[in-house]
Each structure stands twice: as structure tokens, then as C-alpha cells.
Length: 486
Ligand SMILES: *Cc1c(COP(=O)(O)O)cnc(C)c1O
Image 1 (cartoon, protein in one colour):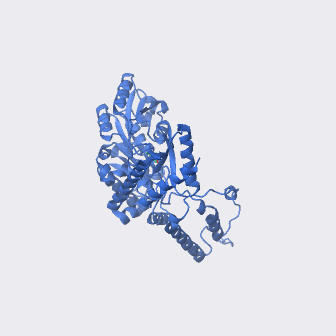
Image 2 (tube, helix red, strand yellow):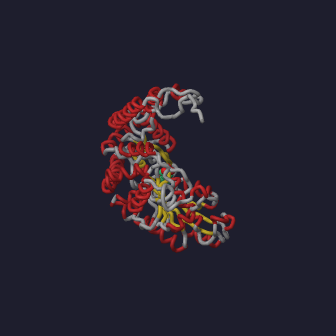
Image 3 (cartoon, protein in one colour):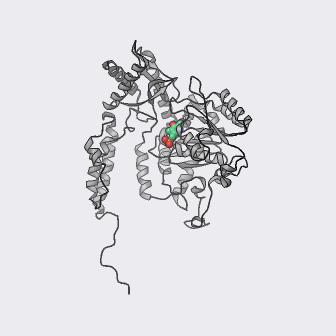
């Protein structure tokens, strides 16, 4: 007879369930206190040297109790947050998250399904959310889609499909070397860097990315695009894809979608839209017309952790032609064979539509959030952010000491302070000083960019906590700090 070992079996579950449960309740309480009071807190604090040292220690050999670990979190990690949960966070393009979205993530982690394959509820939630994403973008119900970690991943997923399904070049099996000529991709000088990176990774190379110039609204010049395509065809190259951006990261500019669509049809090119930031602006009636052509795109990438305000990370790729999508990624090794019944039955493996195999239950936070608020509320929220950006621009235009640096598009406002007699260099230093002090004094977090060679403050707002009054406060503080800087 087999003798059972005397020692207790090891597990990572808590020794004391009650204590862990109480700790969990405390964490939830601390989070709710944080959210409820966030408006009165500084948006950002510099990280003290001792905290940086604390976070630079070798791996622990022995464990410590969970209460101590949590205490260390509260002392060293929680207070030095980035700040994008705060109502005056306007840097880059970063969403705020919502309480229910966070709780949904907790539930998703707790269930901990690997949402790749199998017959279980999360697969159906994931499918439903992808279908809702199609509805949000007015894509046909036969289109396909996949939730991924964010806009960058969503873009490269779409561009992989565009490449693999290009004519009958058999690129998936033979590689790019088998293509009859160099494939060429078109985007604008304002296109997000992830498009170039994607082109590099899928084997096109930087030299095959044509960055078309923009007009004074930072929108792609269609004539220049067509001229370039014709030139490339004459040179014996293979134009294959146009990437339009619906909401550039710099200024929120919208490339002329209808015209890009027409050009792509005329030359038989794949039309991809990078809507990571701005595709959801189609819910705002003011932008619905200009973004209508998105629904005709061959593929679309958009983020839900930006303008759907759900916690990180989640983005979505939609592909009009579901067969092309599946044909680009489907592969069934022996260990992933699907059955018609049981745990290995159910829906098509999600891995047949993307690169990643293991996937978390990121769909749940979207599912719960859309049910909590409904599409109409999101439309109102997005419109509110857009109106806040316009209001800020009005304040800028009313002040003789401020200058608007780009036309306001969607929810991005670019402006700077000006002083008579200052050179461009001095203006750059002045506004850099204003930006740094706004952050260091914990007031607000804009970021910066350079437009036409000029340093500018950039206020990008996908923040569900921002109020109109925050714009008044921001302008007041910019003027105060600017007048203090000599
Ligand atoms: C944010 C953004 C991206 C990148 O998306 P991530 O979610 O950060 O990976 C790409 N394009 C545009 C226009 C963006 O705004």
C-alpha cells in the first residue's frame, strides 16, 4: 500500500481564509475611498528615492504575510500612481476606468478562465462583446473581430490580415519573398508610430511605408497620396494598403475617410482605419458624418481602454471579411483539436483569429460596462469630452496671453502661452516650464507635442471624471504659472 507522506500538501491558497477575506474587503474599501476623493488629491507626486530603492530589491526567497505585502503596496506603490484616474489628467491619450469596470476585472480574475478555446461562459461573453463592437461601429454582423491588449496589437492584427490576404500572392505560406514585387503601405506623417512598427514586424520594412503629407488641419493630403500610389505602380511596386487615422494622437485630426475609401477602391487596396483613439467619436452626432466611412473599411482597430473608459488593457480589431481573417491565423495543432461536445466543444477557437493563445477574460469589463450605462450614455460622455475641448479652445481664444496651436478636433486642444518679444526658443522654455509645474504642483497633467516646429501644450481628454470647471481651472493655473516664470 502506498503510504501517504506525513507532511501537509502545499498550496498557495491562504492559511487563514477569514483573514484573507477581510484583507480583500479592506482593499475594496481603500479603492472606493481613493476614487471618491480623487478630485481633492494631487494628480501626481514625485517618487521619493527610498521608494525607488525599495522597488529595486532582489527576489524574496521567503514569503511574508499578505497584510504586510498590502501595507508595503499602500506605502510605496499606491500613492505614486500615474494619475489617469484623476479628473485633470490630459496627457497622451489615456482612459480613466470606472468602478464597475474594475470590479468586473476582479471577477474576471477570480473566475480566471483562459478565454481561448472551450465550452464555457466567457467564450460567449467574448463573442457577445465582439458583436457589440461591430454594432458600435456599424460593421456588418458577418464581419469578424477579436479583443486584444490595445490599439497597437489591434493594428498589427489587422495589417497581418491585409498582408496575408493580398491578392493570390500566398504570402502566408511563402512569405513576402514570394510576392511578385515590394508591397507598399500608405499612411500620413501624423500616423501613430505603431503602424510603422507593425509594417516592420510583418516584413514590409520601414522603406515600404509612405508617409504622406498633411494639410494645415493635420489631415492626409489625398492628392499627394494618389500621386505617390501612381508613382509606385509605375515603378513596378505593389501598393497594397492605405491606413487612415480617425483621430490622430497629436491633434485628433481625422483623415478624409470618404476620399481614402474611394482611392483604396480605385486602386484595389486594403483600407484600414486606425481608430484607436477616435473611432468611438462616431457616437457623437457632430462627428458621425465624417466618420461614417469607417463602416466601409476592410479593417478597423480601436481601443476600449481609451474612449470606452474601461480599465486597461483592451482594444478591438474588426475585419469585414471573416474568411480572410480566419485564413490569416487559423492553425490547429494536435493539442487544440475541437470536439462537438464537452469542454473542448463550443465556439471556434479565438486563437484562429489572432496571434495570442492564452487570453484573459477582458471581455467581462466591457460587457458589464455596456450593460451598466448603455450606448446612449457613452455617446453623451464622448460628446461631453468633445464639448470640453471646444470650451477650452474658447477660453484660449478669449485670452490675449494664450494661442491656439491647432484646430480643435474631437477632444484634443493644443495651445500655448505667449509673451510679447519672446523668441520661439523662449516660448518653448516658458511652456515647458508651465507644463512641468502643473504636474509637479499636482494640479493637472497635460502633455506636450511639437506642431510645425513649435512646442505646445496638449490637452487630450478621454476622461469620464472631467468637468467643464476643470477647463477654467486649467487656464487660470496656466496663466498664473506662466506669469510667475520670468
Ligand atoms: C493610442 C493609439 C494607438 C496605440 O494604442 P495602444 O492602445 O496604446 O496600443 C494607436 N493609434 C492611435 C491613433 C492611438 O491614439
